[in-house]
Amino acid sequence: MAGDGGDERAHERAVAQREIALLLRRLNVELDAVGARFATAHGLNRTDVRALVAVMDAARSGEPITAGRLGEAVELASASTTALLDRLERVGHLRRVRDPQDGRRVVLEMSESAMAAGAEHFGGLQRALGAAMAGYTEQELALVARVLTDVTDAAGRYARSYGDADAQRG
Image (cartoon, rainbow, N blue to C red; front, side, top):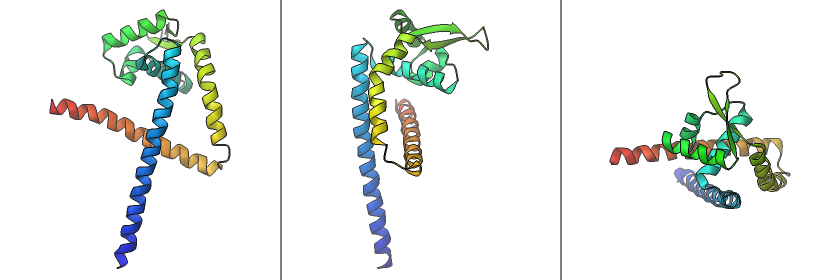
């Protein structure tokens, strides 16, 4: 009988984990819809938006991104990455510039107009998310950040390994 309580707690934990996974899936669907509306409004596709986010995140972290690193980030071959960059540059969302640290290297920058369009579209979402978290304590926010980091990393590892498993089967 002593094991019954442990089994019940394990079952409750598994149920809670599944519920969180479902909530994350629901969040993903809602965020994907926001991104899709942005893409449609600006004549972009999903990969274009992913690429712009990767360039923006690299700039935010202070790590310039090259075409090769961008291709890895959005999982495109070299020729497809070049076509993506040509398209984004042609519509004025992206620039190729010489790296100020190493003039031999070319890095990618978002244009001011792309930054403004992103801020206009996603600024409201940022404010809504901030309002949704306004009542959380610092400790709760730290836990949420930890959970989101851990599950994002797990999803990324899964996505990369899933393709590897397909390649091994094929």
